[in-house]
Length: 415
Ligand code: ATP
Ligand code: MG
Image (spheres, rainbow, N blue to C red):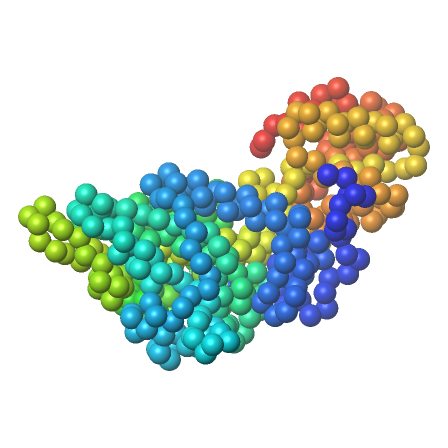
């Protein structure tokens, strides 16, 4: 992509009401546009990053046997009334509920247990249909009273929610443990250091496991020991900082919840009257678990944990482009060399953003730092004197000269 032709250009200034690094850099960089508090458009650059995050999640959900589907965001009240959640005070705080023109009650999906249970009634009939696991990746709506911190807390945001169905607890426990591993793999691929944390179950169940990334931008407080054998959300932790756990000392830190998984038992399936015939021909209710992860919040978390005062530092796995090519100087030979390298890199399958605008070196370097693409490659009269280009990694101050003839090979390498 040539920046001169890109739908967005980096803005000259950060929005003055940005309350977090991810909101400031993603909006200024042209990754996001804010429509209202907690409601964002992903612009072409941001959508490239988002789709890479989503794809990593999809691959790991497929690998564990999840089957992807898509459920509606607009829900009639009936299934929610059947589970008792339509009239629940806590649920009403987060769920958008309204009436259509004929006065029928509807709501926007903030989670999908009720909807998948209604589908399960049609398709889970026999013990042979179990276990099974389905997931979707789509918009969720929550009437968050304090939508804030950019992608961290939206009112419309994206969630991957997977639902698994089992004959018995043992089978569920095995799958659930596998999901913990799958989640940790996702975060590792995203460049996030996530901790498994014990937490209360909120509107779902008594307890759950959260995945938390330590960051001052987080809203949760997590108590933990350095050996990672103990980690609990403050909502359920009874002790205090300084307590001993064996030889370890309890500490506390701010963290961002990037995932949450719940064992739900029969609650939603009983309400939806889902049953199956077991091997002895007896009717049983399957048991269920749900597994949420916020790809949009994860994208915001990557920025929170990977930036400096000038801008973002994307990990390669989710960077919108791998190379940020720029030319300095008006000389025709410079333009020609940069164009040629841009074409060759494209042919070699390297994702390149080429800043071909007629701007000063200062503007171009600042924008490169803001956008946070891992490799910056500069073509100037100085580099061409040596038949070279200059390479700089976003997260390092060192620059190196690479002979033009080696540039494509060198820039095709991942680190
Ligand atoms: P929180 O405690 O932060 O409000 P939650 O516990 O209500 O979140 P879950 O119902 O567990 O959230 O949702 C699963 C995942 O979806 C969360 O772990 C988070 O990654 C993401 N998520 C939840 N709410 C939001 C939101 N308002 N904006 C962006 N992502 C969210
Ligand atoms: Mg949660």
